[in-house]
Image 1 (cartoon, one colour):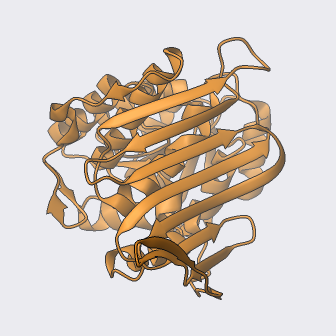
Image 2 (image 1 turned 30 degrees about the vertical axis):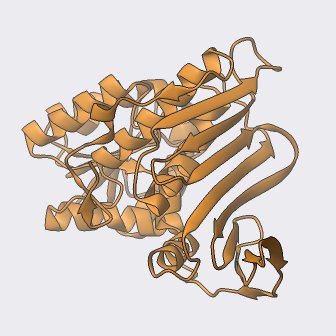
Length: 339
């Protein structure tokens, strides 16, 4: 099994490193001298080219796309049409229509389509999902996620499309459903019409709410996901690499809400590199012909939420209702079909 990677820049170099260390990298495509130099240093035995067509004409089984977001659709389409399995970094595309076309094309070509929602492969997130599914937290009431830092400021897409896909993917996975209402607001301060800060609120039909706060215009780095349950609460901090379970809740006693405060307990989780796990998942999918966790349908769900949030953002925070027909993909979700 041989893999080709297109893009050896800010994030692509990490994919090049991982696939090379897994012993399957044979081609790297990058149009820039800097990217080609980086690829040669990371994978000296791989063929380095600036021609995507040359990569597609090779005998690689899978193509990994780590290029600017606005190129994802066209490059993934070409790779699928060339009968390659495809792993494309988030977002899958910049519109639901484009993403839906890629999913249909993959099915027609009998090829695998995978999206780079790397947080879903993080050992701490997998452990957190276990806490949710086994009822340790009780009924989930509320989830919030903060992804904040100073930079990297992009010109191709706004902060919502750059940072929030990870958080949307994880929240949808934890809840096992799509929201029916999306509200987003934010501001553009560095570049006209490119939001630097957004807050997105999601409302689910089971009463769960979630909010996602993302910014690349922030004085310090914070990557935190908090799940509030009826029995306990959990907090994952990706900066300090910690998952803490809090024995805390609010109980109604004699008609009065009483806060019950307990100690936080560190929850152990595996030390595997999430990106390595994600890369291995792509190889396993190719070998078994079974869809990976973050398949094309997973990418479509995230796109549907992002599109709704973008529409709300443009309308200055007006609520957007996701159409009922868009809430069903017909694909299994956490072991059952969500209709």
